[in-house]
Amino acid sequence: MKKYIIDIYGADKGYSTVIDGALEALAQFSDIHIVLCGDEETIRTYLSAKNYDTSRIDVIHAPEEITNHEPPTVIFDKKQN
Image 1: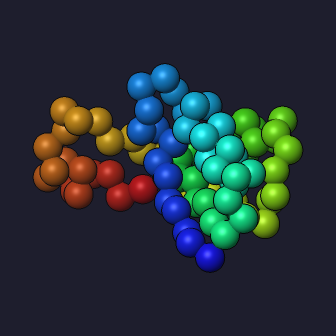
Image 2: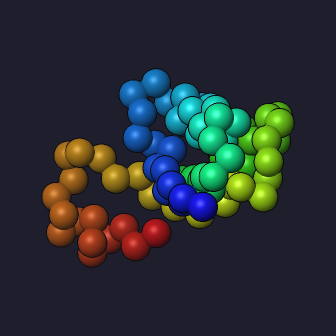
């Protein structure tokens, strides 16, 4: 089984687009497992209204968003989560 780790904050149109895409991939491909990274409460709340195979999705709580404007030193020193 292939595992894909997806940052839910990585889309211009918001996290719902990313999560919906992940759920669509699960429906199309039986040999994948998805790990969603981001704010756990946000992800679980959104997923609660969806129908999907819960055994094929994991959530990693990562509450700190990293923007393109932050230097690597700030990211590694101050954003440990």
